[in-house]
Amino acid sequence: MQKKSERKIHQCVCKVCRLHPYSQEAKRHQAVNRVLSELNERNKRRFAGVLANEAGRGGISHLAEITGLSRTTIARGICEIERSNKKQSSKIRLSGAGRPLVEKNSQKY
Image (tube, rainbow, N blue to C red; front, side, top):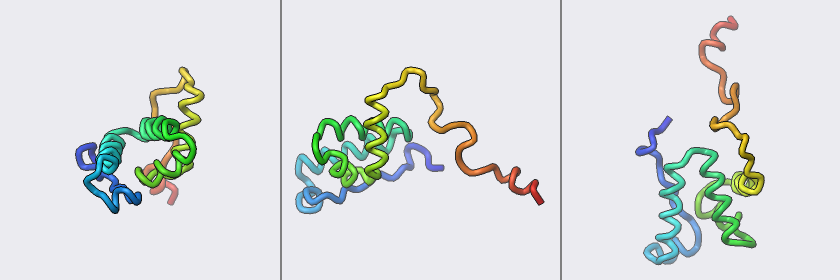
């Protein structure tokens, strides 16, 4: 797993950034991607959801192009913000999620 300081920052591939890489809009996209590189999974979704809501119609697709996140991930972030359940645990993933431990797999044989 990469440390926070080693995480790669996504490069935006939108039309504005390709044509005018030093414009204010391109700098804004770079700033968004720098912030996203420091967040965990849940906070990435929520931050992307807030930005997509701000953009209005077409915001999810545009933000997916800027950040490299999938549209379903951004839509899930919007839903999480709208629900805002106070009882959510502080864990990012549910217990038992992810790949099984190597020790578990090797004990089967």
